[in-house]
Amino acid sequence: PPLADRVEWAVFSLLSTAGPLPEAAFYDRISTLFVGHDLPDEALVQACLDSYRSQDSTSDLLATSDDLLRRSQEHTELLAALAGGGHRMGMRVWLSRQQIGRRLGPGVLGDVLDERERHAYLGGISRSTAELEEVDCVWYVRGKLAFLFEVEWTAMLGDPLLRKHARIAPDDRIVRFLVIPPDRTELARYKLARSPPLR
Image (cartoon, rainbow, N blue to C red; front, top):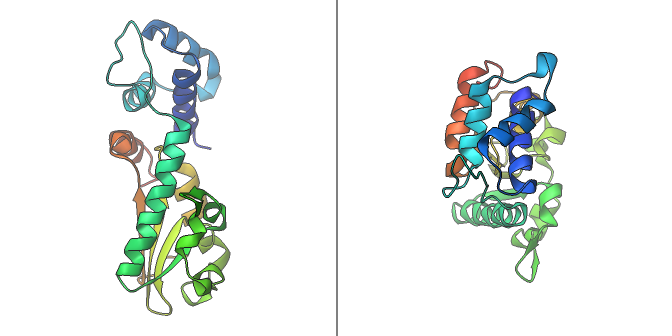
């Protein structure tokens, strides 16, 4: 994974597991996690910290309000909302196999799909069928157009952009969306501004 994504995960992990800690102790711990050519610049660490620190944090006590279980549930609910939106637009919907088993209410996320959608073949959208199957949510009209949605609660863009979508051939009939929470917007912009491959 790109250094920026590894630094982001380290910042979140430290804030979520170490409990409230002074800003100086936070920087000391982060500096022990990355050495040599992996040493991040202070601006990147600060951008990650700004994205994950809670509103109540001070320089004496840093904490995060991000919770993995809550973010996971939000992710599932957003995918269900996207599927509903695609259906309301009169389109077919695909949800990746990694997502359809997630708990949603009394059932699972896959319950929002009809039988044909659960067993759809995506070859009519693109020749990159295996890669399309990994996309979180796809709205499509076979042979005409498709909207691809990647839903992330972090600003870690390496996997969705550089791994998944780099393998999906460009096509004027395919429109791609990256969906992130508002509190990750500035960090995502920071990473995009500093990384030509991500741009």
